[in-house]
Length: 150
Image 1: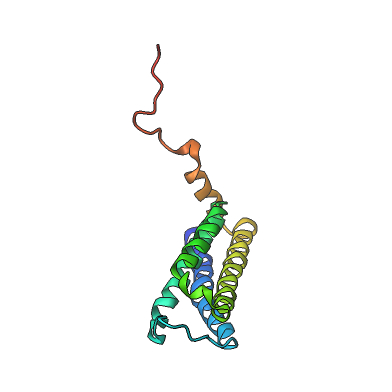
Image 2: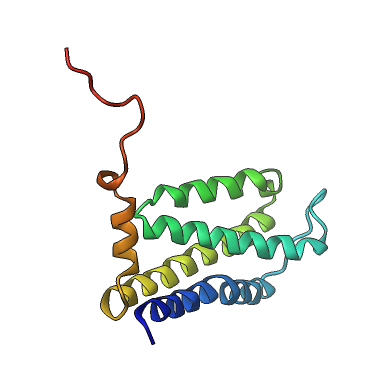
């Protein structure tokens, strides 16, 4: 197997763990916690939207971890809180929301950390290559930002 296919395989596996397995485990965990009824809350048919939000949340968290941008974690938490602000007044819902959010964050950290370790030790160095491409020194200068003599 060529190096590119090898890198694609273990990265695809990590993405599968991050999204599909993450949603399955989070759903299983939340089945053990009774979902509180909140007035004016979204109907139960929004499961598909919640699943997509979970995928996106963990992908954004993984991108932040891969780029050493921990502030993305704060941004994700802030967005989730704003979206559910009204419902967080109820303690039961706040606890349910917190369990799901903390699991999602922990899962993203575990899977992304495992992928980074594997990539560094046994993989082809995808993260190092991405970091090199994204480093400020490799970016072209912005237009109008050149210093003029005088």
